[in-house]
Image 1: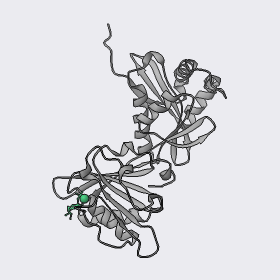
Image 2: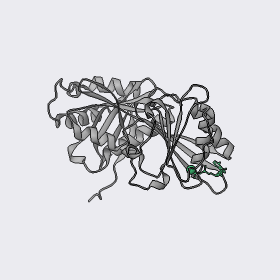
Image 3: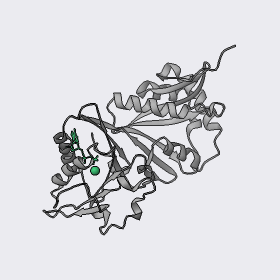
Image 4: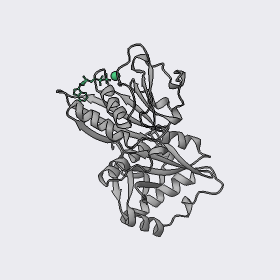
Length: 300
Ligand code: ADP
Ligand code: MG
């Protein structure tokens, strides 16, 4: 008797086309009919072999049986995922999560900006699953949603000056309506980074940790974008950005929010999520995760 084992995942070429085709036909054959119809069932051994030989794909096996697969395609700076299929009999094994994680790993290795796929609006549970895996809607064409997951960027920042300089670099990217969410423990460097951003934008007033106010608006000294600095760190986990009665239109400003962990997910807004972690010495490790269509074309 074979014990139940974890599914395995591998990148495959055209030599595995028959197994990938079988997954596609079974997985897509299970879905309700769509209008316009999904074309997955038109795939043939030849079309799948050709796609796999050109760009590769992934195959997940469980107990020696193919249970999930996808095809890669090139979508500019993004690694595209097509024909993402998981057999109904393999649900609950985390196959789609494995496919997503492995595609992200390969996208990192090959210097793509992220991964992208199309989902049908008529399949809300599928769309919800991709959202759960960190994809966001980046466009819509009829009933086809483009969903995008960008790769995080990591930087090591040895000194406070490096953290400030990173903020200065961020300032060069900013447009009206942009939002930066900073997370990290007290003293991690959130305000330090915001100071560099404020200097880069050329705004008035020292950016400090406000003790009595939650939000402060720093107007531009040179006709540029104002900086809205929100210190919601102490608001706790019930805070909502909408609740802050800001006296400024955030669509006309750059908004930086120092925030507790895990709250950014409640925001619908495109944003740069930045977490700062303090190491043994004063070195900080920064992780920047771009979220949403605003950052689609950003080349890191
Ligand atoms: P937060 O807003 O996250 O609570 P602050 O930016 O107010 O943190 O404080 C960070 C403190 O740590 C500052 O006194 C800063 O000078 C110091 N510091 C030392 N090394 C670094 C570094 N590499 N990056 C950021 N801050 C640093
Ligand atoms: Mg602070």
